[in-house]
Image (tube, rainbow, N blue to C red; front, side):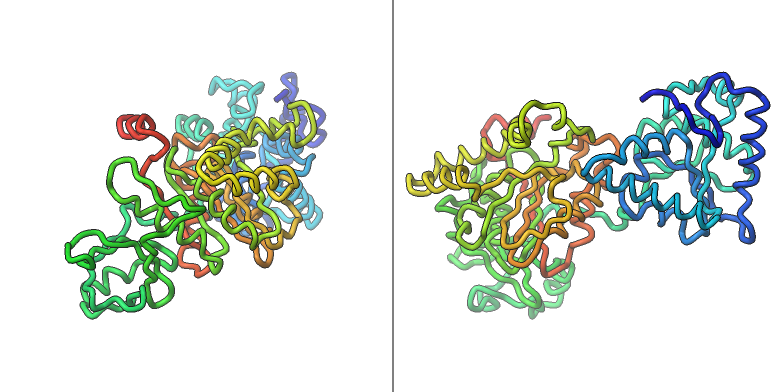
Length: 478
């Protein structure tokens, strides 16, 4: 991004700023950080990745005026460049800009623009041609001018955080959505059951043995467990079960989707797939998250469930978060209409559809081809979901670990009556392509944390790679 230009208030970006101009900047800043009445508890210097992490970040940092948000001009310029368009990032940028404008109109001192000191920046070997350096220099200047005040740089960018720590600065990421962020219980909960506790393919949450009852107490609604029992006269893992209120529903041993049963590559029962199939077929659970590494059949199972239940839904909508891989809109640079632009990004979806067509009968294969032709199956651009109310659709969004929580929330809340949404992804650090998201702050992890325990949400971690023996071997060794 080019260096700053034409910012009348402080003219911060020009290399040739005179001492007189620098003095005016310092005089104005000296006034702007003096909030009348209460002294701010903290001063937050923010970068763009922090402000664009979610709609409510700006207000949560302000805490109703208890804190002061200092906006470097580098941050403001980036926000301004992101405000055009119809994507989620543009929506958040416009929201932040409006909030700042309204606070300035109200003469609210809890938000201020802040520049850097050229001499201070030069002494620190920082160059004003780099936005990250401008932001660091601004934070250093704020720390110098505010003396004993608590100055904190807020960023989701690991590189910027590391640079700030090198200068001995206090740094934090946006933590509001990270409270109690935990994946589904891994390893999966197991329980020992006696046959006489089981009735009509269910068993109670409160078992006769207090120790076992306590063991089940932490299991969330719609979470799956593995049950050991001697149903067949031999003690061992007998079936999976899913918690439904004050009882557990046993998953059918012959469960399948389009005739395709749970698969395993190592001879051990793939209990994760049993539980996933059960939740995907359960119309009382409109939101399901499937997590797991490559080759564990997250997308494959989701598509199977959509095709098997197609008669219950008006349309099957499929999308992938990696359309904006690395937080860059690459669709606009591709030739053709939106379908042509999206096709390269949707190849993994088509690969799974083709794999399904190889496994089903000719009648179902013809139906799938017809649905692809007549629009029953639609490949959806995530940015076009904004403002929609999606009624009676089966929605699959792949790779959501590459979306911030605010985007996942925006997508999930588009679901209307009769719609089922399935979000898939892998929250391993090496599968997150957006530089300012990590294992805790990504949309998949936060979705699991926020929705865990809801009767409308179920989450399953798939832990067996079934794509091929080679995939399994690589994942075990690497």
